[in-house]
Length: 251
Image 1 (cartoon, rainbow, N blue to C red):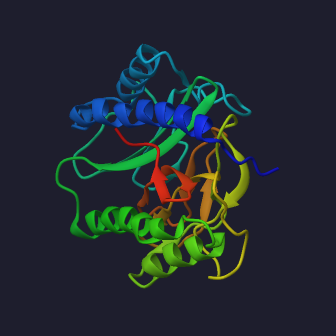
Image 2 (cartoon, rainbow, N blue to C red):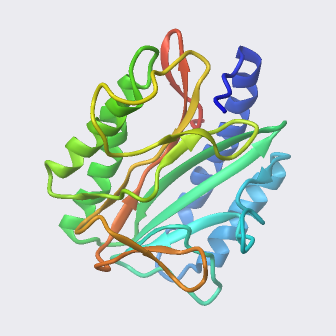
Image 3 (cartoon, rainbow, N blue to C red):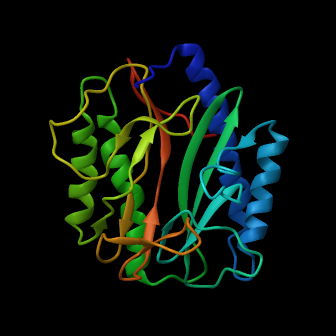
């Protein structure tokens, strides 16, 4: 069921979104070789708790997700589990997905960080993934359709030779972490649900250096590229308003 948000709801979602953004700001100095993914998780957990919020992902789903954030490295597309034995290395890219619930509403966003010296083609992938979101951002406004967003992301990335993950999508968000509608990153312009004022969407391009196909690892959570080439992830929670799109996951 589609849940449209009031101005009061959006105020609370903006507060939750600021908590998410503050996590990325706190994590940036830790994106160095030798730091464990468990340490990143603990930094994020403390920021979320200090803000009076709850980590949206912790205990979510089945099996219950064990981390406060998802930390996905190189070929891991999403849902990487923090691990004290896994240390960051120069040349890697690390996607951090953060969710926080505050005053009954969730914020959700993701960023891909580069560790040390990254290969030029991988750096270009990270840049294109982020830019594909911003190419589609003007279309997250009343009157456009979900297919307009999807086609813009897909066309921008595929024109540059990248794969666009099909099986995973963005989503509506609000009092539940995942609400209707699904927000794919591929599709046909002019198709799909028409956007309305009050919709809140977590739009999240998941883009690969090679083929778009993915697999799930035996831990029940981590999603990797089938060809084991790197993937990047970029996400924001966006409100559809009468004045156009408003990013809620920003400081």
